[in-house]
Amino acid sequence: MQNPNEKNPSPVLYYSESTNLLEQSAYRYQLQERDTPNLYRHLFDYETVPKVSFNHRAVPMNMPDGIWITDTTFRDGQQSTSPFSVKQIVDLFTLLNKLGGEKGIIRQSEFFVYTEKDREALHRCQELGFEFPEITSWIRASEKDFELVKELGIRETGILVSCSDYHIYKKMKLNRTRAMDKYLGVVKSVLDRGIRPRCHFEDITRADFYGFVVPLATALNDLSRESGIPIKIRACDTMGYGVSYPGTALPRSVQGIIYGIMHYAGIPSELLEWHGHNDFYKVVTNASTAWLYGASGVNCSMLGIGERTGNCPLEAMAIEYASLRGTTDGMDLSVITEIARYFEEEIGYEIPARTPFVGRNFNVTRAGIHADGLLKDEEIYNIFNTAKILNRPASVAVDSHSGLAGIAHWINGFFRLTGEETIDKHADIVKKMKEAVDREYAAGRNTVMGDEELENMLKAISYDKYTALTHIHVYPRGVSK
Image (cartoon, rainbow, N blue to C red; front, side):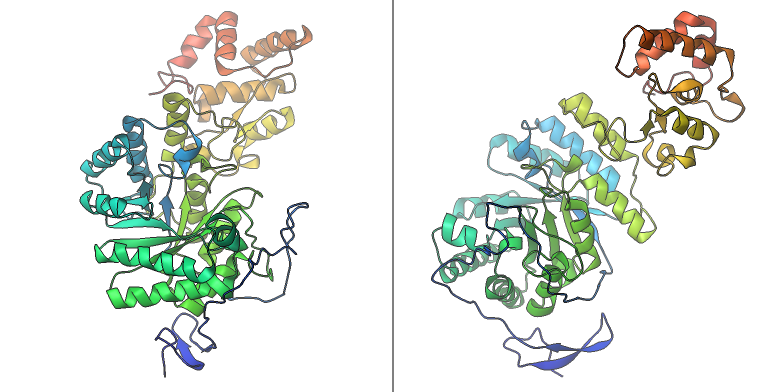
């Protein structure tokens, strides 16, 4: 029976080893040229919020055997922040290695190579000798950049292949035929140097899927077979238009894009990854959907930094991995907290306080009734054992609504008191601290009280008690080991 991935197949049935069913490969899609661009004005008229249309077509879920995370902090991420120093890049790269573990769940990290500083940082990271993340690059379509990548000993590089008519016609001033010829020529030049191309299908969620995306992917698959070098496709939701609702029509359907590239162009899971942006708050769900429907890779950045609303947060997908697989597979999730602290303390990056997993308040409660629940059993109001998994114990922010329970929980958390060491909410020291807190708010205060302020308050009320609590574990929770 003919394999549908063979060149110019006729419509045939083939046996799918992933579904154990006979499936039909109906077409080999050809490039569809147009005199005018297809801008999907029924969805994107620019004067109203973009519309989501449905055709009620379902595609099969197809989770790959292997899934992983790739990193773009030093490429796309760095485009949205003050440039990192060489030391900061090396330190963050080391944390990526530690977070990803020996199995390399964080598989790759891409770097710029344009400046002397870029190249120094890349060399310093190469000298660390880590197997994971593999260092890759992103380059312009120029002979100089091709040679530079080769000289640096990089085995894979990203290449921009914009695929929507917004880019082809309006930005590049080309038609589809000339754009495809240009892209294939660049890829051939990279292949000639023995480098693995990673083709960034920019703006795929506004692109003519059957008229350009699938034909380009098919042509790249042909080049891969001819050269014997794998060619990766990164499906880039550049504007965050992708949606994961069942039955969504292309070009906005995440699962439709992943299924179509695999089924019609023959691209295997391990050569397909998703890159999303968060313009419509869908970046994490879309990345997870890409995994579920067949892409092995999801491209992320630490803390989700990136252009406009940012990329998919790498820490979010590390948690998603553990959630979907039921195991961390060797990842050290506590490094997520180290990364957050490094960004704030060493780089000066301000993380919004309510950001999941990394914000200062992500596992902090203020309501007194919630604090009472935490005091009785933190599982009632904490998402999981954040102290064990992320090295971030659940805590309580003390204000006028915290009550005795909130203050007791703050003392226990700050001084890491457990078991018989814990302070009850009816303890005398708790009552005295509440009286002091109440006086603050009765005098007109309207801001939450910080750890240092509460620590000083406790010292003033009873220095002996403060000293006793401090010496239980040598240092309070707020102080580094």
